[in-house]
Amino acid sequence: MQKYYDLLIEKFLQIYPKKIQQFLRKDIVFSKEKHFVKKEAVEGPYDLETRQVILWNPNQNEEEFFIFLTHEWGHKFYHEWLSEKQRSEWLKIRSRENIDFDLKNSYSVFQIPEEEYCTVFSLISLVLYWRKMKMKKKSHKLHQKIKQEFPEAAKIVEQHIHTKSANHSSLAHSPDRNITSREVEVLKNWIHRAIQE
Image (spheres, helix red, strand yellow):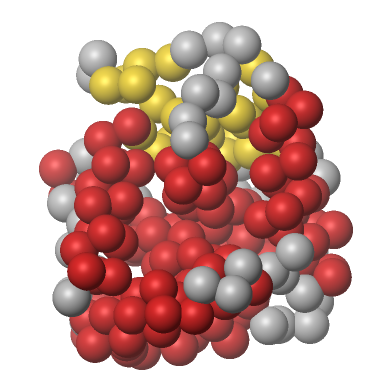
């Protein structure tokens, strides 16, 4: 089963510039463990201390795997690629737009800006992936919906994805970054509604 997910990872990575592919490819760890937070299954975290994206017993279809993996890559990107200045810029932009994916029910106010970044990173990644897969109508519809809902946030995340080099500053220590099955489902449903309109 890991081979299947390894192939998917390589397929997903193709949407990013080469340096980002190399950056995201490293530090992916598969684990057969299952984890729960408040009785809710957790798909996988980004561990800030080890800088690893941990895939806990992946058992999703391609779409769900894409959503949760790109979300966790968003955490890695946020902490290891972006500069302090870029993170500050993100905090200003996200405060002007409503990026509502029911995150306030799972996260503290201090965690929400990062979770929003990872959500937008995942959505922009899906637009790029569908473009790459020649699914132009879906890609266009999703991109239009994203630009309608949070245009500044989408624009800045797209710019970040095309940034030339990583931030190599030291990382602050804080808890793991997780995405739960429910969060994957909320995002998946939003995507499906966006491309139905």
